Length: 385
Image (spheres, rainbow, N blue to C red):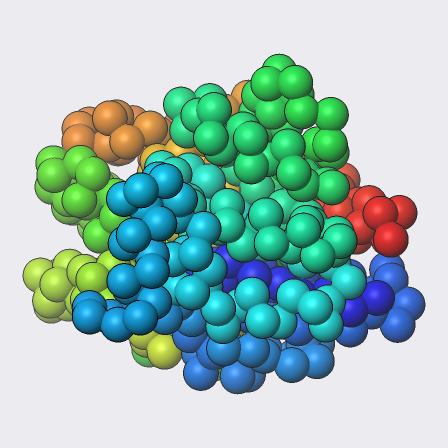
């Protein structure tokens, strides 16, 4: 079976890297002879990922004005409202790889949470037109994200693998019968433990991840996070490890957390992890934390999968659904509208501290079950072939 992963924006987002790494590994464990290729919009960022048999340039090629493609696309859209030609030219790097593929995996876990995706819709149509299998791999989609156009696209898929029950239930409620429940593949990703940095307290360090995405959506959230940092410094003896997880231009955790670090570095209890580590290296640090507070989903998955009590600064259905599947409730997940209040963050952090032992026990029982659900995705994929 020759598999092509697509809808991947590159591994500068370590969550995207975690999906590719873990998916490739678990598929090869469960499907004998599988060959896995990655179509990436930033292929240079994915060069170090093992288990891949090749990396394609899947970057978009925007139409330039004036050009023949631009002219044809403009005429077709103006006369017939037909986007197909233009979108096909924009996505031609990816589309030309379809004939050599048996199964195409759309791996952007939350791509469908951000409005309409006409480029992906066009790619999906072309995959099916060429008789290939089409799979939406480990997705999360909120009911508020749905539209008739999106639903029409989802009906084309041979298999949709929802990574948590909130998405699974919603899609089934939309009448989609091609949906199966799994878990995020990153729950199975290995870790690499680098030497601990100076100032790290073994068994007494709390990780903190904050993102420009959340900060931009809730302008008051930054001050609430500052209030939580001051509380930890004043009321506990823990060290805080600021932990970036996405280093994309315009959406760079490291740059944001660097500004936090500059304010607190003189305390001697706030350190900043480097901005150039791989997903498995970040997981290696997160695994040795006592607690974790995180905005990036795959940073929190790294914590959960190592039994680290975690407070999630959530902004979509995926955070709520993952917590629900782990704990039976949306435990210690704050929505985007809740994280502007420092008192709420401090209260939830205190709750996490008080229930530390119980949370660890729950995770130790839940994670093996969740990891088997991660592998179940590969089993469904094997059945499809």
